[in-house]
Image (cartoon, rainbow, N blue to C red; front, side, top):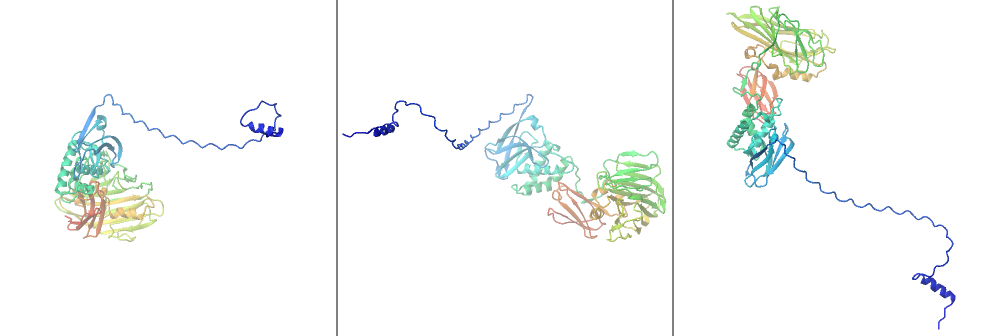
Length: 543
């Protein structure tokens, strides 16, 4: 028999405590304090939960007094009607055609037809357009009618042409057209495109054909100005508003004509420019400029003076050398700093009268500075020079003058200047006119700016000239060339080259392809017209 010692029993009991608890022993003494444990690691952040789906916006409530309008029509591409489920949206656009806001949309049925419910307050707005895309072609139409709206390549081209017109300075908008006018334009465009066999899938080709064939009608209906090209070349017209803004009760001391940039031309009783100030307020351009003398007698208006259209001062007539002499002095209030003189000599007798005519100027430079350039390319003024410009050595305004052709003598420096037309014959019961120009620029203006003006007087410089005055001028032989809407591409540069006289002039066409420019030349001269849109050369013989 195996026996256990006391020591073995104690070990056995100690081992057995793992499985069973013995009787409670006496309390032991407190042990030493244990060391602090290491800090536990931070727990990992939990994954964010998925955002809940936004709730659907509720439909706007109807205004209490609003009326719902049903807008309906059809959608088609160049190959035919749209299929079922083609989206159609109603949007508001700005002048460039960019979308501002959407007013809703719908889908077409199997026949390409659609119907859209719209608040009549929306329909009453301007510049509303229905847009769609079918067969890869973007199509649109202005909303001029609530029903039977056609959205196709033709309506897209007409709308594009209208948007071009809204980009002109006149600021015309779609509201210039009535539903009947849009219908007329659509029908005319559709006929023109069919006749020309235009590829309706080419938006640019469609627009070009509409501008070329319907552009004039489209511009005319836009309530803007439109002058058809009847003979190709026309003289300037008389001002549309010939009202007299001011009539002097007696002789006047000064009347100011102000250009668009603020340049001020202070005119005295004899029509002379007394001082002259540029737009940047450089003064002392003249001490006396543009003094008219006939056979040595200085013109003066006396009691006869009036202002027409607040832009043209008319002084005279007064009698000199048996002639009734009138001076018209014009400054475009919205144009460049250019002054135009029209000196009119009328012979009411039964016999011709021959006179010598001088125009003299006394400059504020008083001999300082110098002649910067002349039309002949040097710094010496001679009878061969149509124009020149000068500046002093200080801060006086820069002075430019243009006297044209037919000059018998011309001398001058930065102190005094005289240009003469000697032996001028004024026919019996007829008239002779001199038309010439001046300009005032800020001191330090770039030469290229001045010369561009002198070599190509802007169209505005000829505004308001009466045909009789224009056609009897002995020192200028310019023709006003007009192109009707669609003559060239929108905003293209049109260049007229007088091949006979080696003179070129350019202008920028309007958004409808119309243009107008003054082209120097004489009867019989050959002028070639070109445009940057690729228009073929067109040769015109001046009449």
